[in-house]
Image (cartoon, rainbow, N blue to C red; front, side):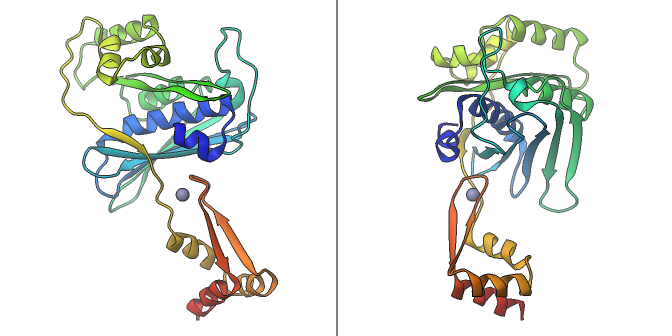
Length: 269
Ligand code: ZN
């Protein structure tokens, strides 16, 4: 999250929104393998304009994640509880979740935002679209100097679980200290799990690292430019000595000379 904030120069409220969504993406992305990808996209009418977060398997027990806000400088005053007013920055809109598989059609589900606070919206998506009762607690502690803590926990019940189990998890999540306060106080992922589990038994199975990553390449930029077509590219090569393309996920800038663009025109035949 620190790297995402720096790359996008995110304002505090925007960093809270991006951090909550990318934390949810990373947690839900644990089950991905190979070239599968999970994408969480918020399209909304608040000053932030929308947030997108992706996660995928970046190797053995490593989750790669990336995210950006449409307007990363969006900042609004703290709410009446003294917290980041993510709901106000996000506004009204939809959360779309897309899973892309190695083969076959992608799966996509969409829900209206419940509050724009993101954690609740992800929980609503999981409950209505995937029929998995879930407790989602995600958070970011940021100040004008940067990110102090970011992370969260998602607890889901397995099919056939007792009705009271999800109620217990919800109760625990509501009464526990905010995840950001726990993390800032030194809590590790297992401690977060234990806090939400309360008296329920917890047995750690597996651990994953999360890293900011991006899958953009010069080749993908060229493919996107090829989509502009022969006429547009010819015009670009003639009118501008260099063409710049910036990846919206990581802000990496790719520069193509007029000769490079002419090379693309030739590839189009
Ligand atoms: Zn990129």
